[in-house]
Length: 227
Image 1 (cartoon, rainbow, N blue to C red):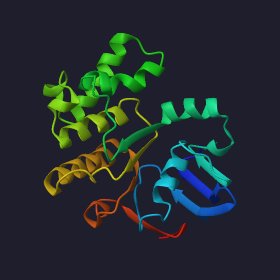
Image 2 (tube, one colour):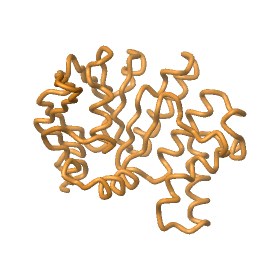
Image 3 (cartoon, rainbow, N blue to C red):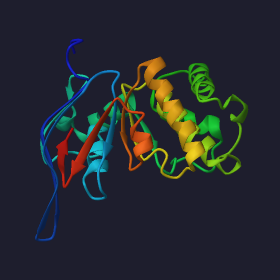
Image 4 (spheres, helix red, strand yellow):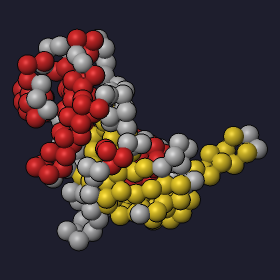
């Protein structure tokens, strides 16, 4: 991949769901470029296809037609096994409801993605400790999710997203379950990751305040994209 190419290049992307005899178009002929180091917010009404687009870029779902190239790889053409391996290596996920394992402490939750790699136990520990330090939770490393506030749980989730040093961070309503103050802290952290570490972030949000943090705001309306 040359330095001039976008990190994410989407061409004529469509997604259709079929329910019985009903065909439901969710995304229609989407074209979108995301530069390396960009911070993009996706907004639109419920049902506009925002989360579907995010899931397609992250390799969680596959398009009905079109092309999605991430770091030069057309992920729409990968087999399920290759797509899972690509996703583990290149994508960090941040979800609205954290998706932490309640029976694992903060360290073990952050370590989970690394268990799919060939890193040694010592290397995994170093990565996890670094990620938790970046989100300011070194003192909560042995705490379980039920011992953490909502904001702290989301910070653990962000550390988990970072620990593999992913190509792309995707965030689906990362402040949707948080109060305004705590949400602002989480947005400040994502902003730091973008500015200081150069992480590329694609975020779905309903919150205009959250969208203001992004470099670029894109609207989806009935599956159609508009800058």
